[in-house]
Length: 143
Image (tube, rainbow, N blue to C red):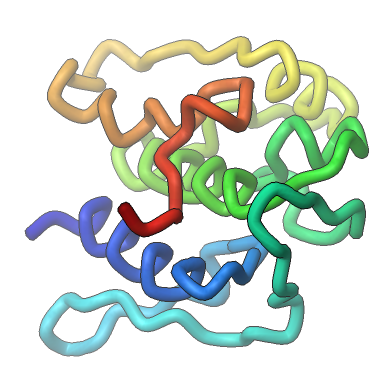
């Protein structure tokens, strides 16, 4: 199982109980068997289904558009972060990287995503989590 798939499993476990985690790579560890270990739950917040939180926190490169624009967010913001990390694992940089933080936020909110040439179509589904709207992102809800 690939690292992106393992990330998805870890986030499903964290968010299954209605928690939003505001992920960042510094809080992800790989064990000797290659499994993802999630650490530092200091910013975890329970968000009831159908509601949102407006707390502004997180690593700028991994913030979902709804956090940046303060429109309220839920577990979908965590899935955005997983998409950013999946992209970074393959490309070596975050998808909206810019030296100017405001320009980076503008790219993320406008979803100005450029696929590197070496980025195969097989890798792109994991980055489908970078959809600008919350609803189409992979859901943490159990069936």
